[in-house]
Image (cartoon, rainbow, N blue to C red):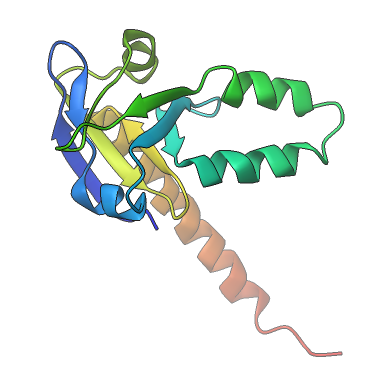
Length: 147
């Protein structure tokens, strides 16, 4: 499981280290898959099992299937980890996420995202605010009666 947020350095050639807890979550896999997010200016990533779950979910789609396949599988890049856990992020991926000098890996259960650190901070603040509003809505509704 991918949890926590870890800031790592990104050198001029786009090399960075996958955080040790994320490497552990990959359970020994030497390849990680990363693609530009279609939801935000960040990268999404995970292991082969994640892509297989996405593929299974897409088989149930009709009209949107092609769009998801292009957005995820068509743009995904398999990145080989070296013995120290370093990968090389292609320039096109770095540009999409605005990664220069640093990258913030944030765990989202079965996947992770890679952000420009200040952009992630903004995203987290917005998510907390929405979560706080959702919590208040739940509290106002009160407990549900059982049928």
